[in-house]
Image (cartoon, rainbow, N blue to C red; front, side, top):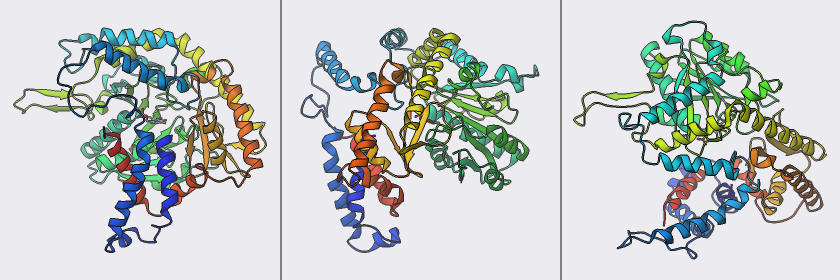
Length: 508
Ligand SMILES: Cc1ncc(COP(=O)(O)O)c(C=O)c1O
């Protein structure tokens, strides 16, 4: 993650000048804010070349060209950009990021995208095919996640249903907004709270911020699973939803969804399973004979699930599914207005117009994979995950956090794990540096199931550990910085820098 790397590095170098017990107080002292801003400017100037690497090699545009450029010129340029960027992920050096990526699969999805590039699900009259694709994506995902098996009634209001969204974050935001509105309507809750393990995705914090929900984070146990007793203690009359991950992004562990969802049900709250990562892996893992704890609609307390088609569903980026236990709950997600001069208006998700081509390509990905394809892909990923775990366990200085299947976080008691990551970055790997506790993870995808990739990872990791063991006090790199970014008291400075970073993304 070059962005985090950079910000952490710069922060680490300069933060010592800024540290103080009280950030607000410090920054209110005359001149301090100006100094801080100057520091930011310096950091951003240093960041610029790595963030804008194409300024010298490709033309930039801050206003429209007077006459249109030739299409072949544009295509040539875009082809060159693609080639520069694709090797790393294609060769399996990335953690997560591209989940399928085989040429044949990508070419097929591109053809589908081209066929439907003009379609917009907002206009269901013009493109009823878009509505068909989305309805079937939702139905197939619900079926995979225990919907059919959980249905004991023909009652329409007890039918698992959902919508397609643009990604995991949107699915989570939609679900949290839904619970807020449902709880206000049904339970009169005006000060809503959600209970989520510390390991649940940042999207839940984002939802809490956006929708005025109080976030109650609960700790995880020694196995990196949500602590059920802490969840019980966090519940109160304002709890609208409890959250669990299947599995979590940081450590790939599955929370005790059965216990947590029972707690939520008893308290009259909703329960959301975040299966963004695992929704298209765990059902097949179960069929393959892996011991997978219950996490889906077969548990009566589970009232919503997010599952990302654009991860292990192998659709192109830009799609996910949010499922609800009943149409009644789903209706709290919808937006409708009957009074606007623009006419009757309604939309199921946050966006208005949406890219129908992404839903078409998602639908096509799911159909072309089929049950057999997902089973085979899952088998390959879990076998490769097992190979990686064995390799890590054979390195005495390292240990694996929790008991994951394919998202594997590892740490060390004797070596600085961020130095190990530095070395891996030097070998071309793009791994995720995590904190609280300090560790590194690799999210195994089909890219890593290519011959030789897992061996290369373990060989490089072995060399990394040997190098760090020989050179424990080596200077430079990211290692001294990572921990500091997590523990630094001036959180406002960290946050400001992240915002400055986003500003810079939008500079030409
Ligand atoms: C468990 C989990 N939930 C949610 C998300 C957010 O998904 P997205 O990046 O598609 O918004 C992720 C992303 O990695 C995830 O791993």
